[in-house]
Amino acid sequence: MRLICENCRGTRVEGPNEWACMSCGAPLTPVVEPVEKWVDAICDIPGVGRYARLLPVDHTDLLASSDDALRPVDSPRLARVLGVRSLRLLPQTWNVTGTFKDNEGLLLAAKCRDWEISSVCMHSSGNTARAYQYYMDRAGIECVGFVPQASAYKCPNRSLGRATIEPVPGNMASAADAALAHSKQTGAVRLTPSQWKIEGKVPVGLAIAEHCPDTTVIAVTVASGYGPLGMERAFARARSAGLSAPQGHVYRLFQAADASLLGEAIRNGHQEIDLGRMTPPEVAFEPTLQSTNPNRTLPLIRRLIEETGSRIDAVPADRVAEEAGTFHDACAELGIALEYSTEKSAFICWAGLVMAARSGELRPDDQVTMVVSGSRPYAQLP
Image 1 (tube, rainbow, N blue to C red):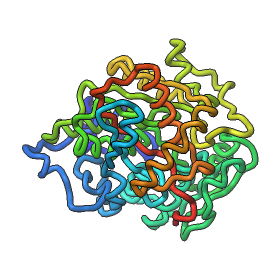
Image 2: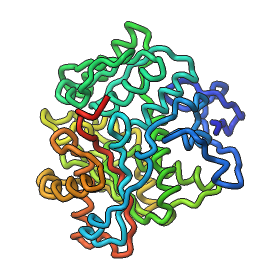
Image 3: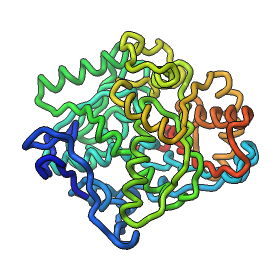
């Protein structure tokens, strides 16, 4: 797959953070090489690497990951709770570092190798830093991830080969400032890759397109909305490669009640989010959902919601706690290990689905695919 400038047909990327033509500066568009059959579009590399020909990466060997994380698991028990035809779980907790941020981390590590970058830094609330730490080290790239002290527990291994995690007193803005200062001091490339974050969710969408093309409802917890944006990109790409993909589907997107600025902006028709309101609470219900800047994705996710008839809902903490036991036990039966005390993202999504079902917003014939985007127990992580 190539990135093409529609203005001047340039194909080179300006840098690791955005897609821009080096000749004219215009945005680049991903173009899939035409194939007649899906079998010609896939590779024998495990996990994300299976879709290497549909991803803008040259070092495709670095896309190897967990096959199991991209194979949906059917849960008749949870389907009965929701009163729907089927519920399939996409167990992203089976990724090496335990979350769906692995797809983004390995993709960007491969791109840094493409660009011959040897040292990077970034900031996050935890899970993204953990994924970048692992995959940058695997690619032989030095990486420093800065995370707020309050969520540093999300990164239990502070040092991993060439990659380290640095806790920072303060909030996400403090972590961002620390990454910027480190970049200026050392010359490390500071990664703020919104387009690549969207691209990092494409493998998740391709897995749904391949294994669950009959999906009518896609459920996932969101912060800035990168997940559904990447999935829609994946569905279009899958169709261009000869595969049927979900059509006429809706997204049920859920946020923690204390991290719902994106959803509030959509529901209230705001064109911009007041950055002054983005300071996360001192004790966040789920720190990894405290977005850095949802204004980047606000117009994109607004258009997607309007086009698909989807919605974003906030889920109160008490409802998450009430429904956690049922979801935990059902996942345990399927071998999907989750730990509520350290990561609540998947539990937020499940509680949101239960709320939707009880409000009559799910139909008996719905076929739901839920992205399990939390984390497995830290003792099982590298």
